[in-house]
Length: 145
Image (cartoon, rainbow, N blue to C red; front, side, top):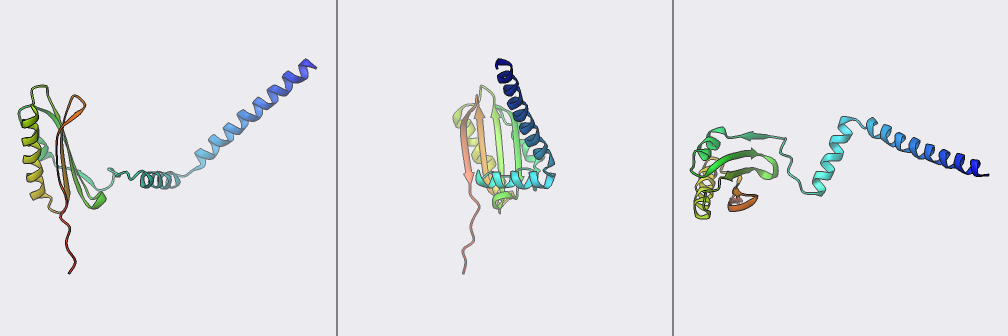
């Protein structure tokens, strides 16, 4: 009787293993197109911006930002997603003060707004995993006549 119970237990485990293997095979059968569609649906649910489409970098302005005292690194992305965004993340070193960070965000937000008129510009300075300063200049909306 005891042997039968153990054998039955093994049989249930085998069924569970087979079921999970079937699930894995089903997942593998999804085409790249299906996976992309599923990802897009998830992104829409989470209101995520897909940075992989129509993204470019402005290396010239990035280099200018990195020349600023107290700036250790900058990342500048220009995207058409969400009606156009210019996103700038600036990493500050320990000597950069809050008032200097605010001047930098305002300076480059205004400069980038002139260059990318039809975009929302978001410039942020981060120091030790905190946002030290942030300037956002929204895209101007055209009034309908």
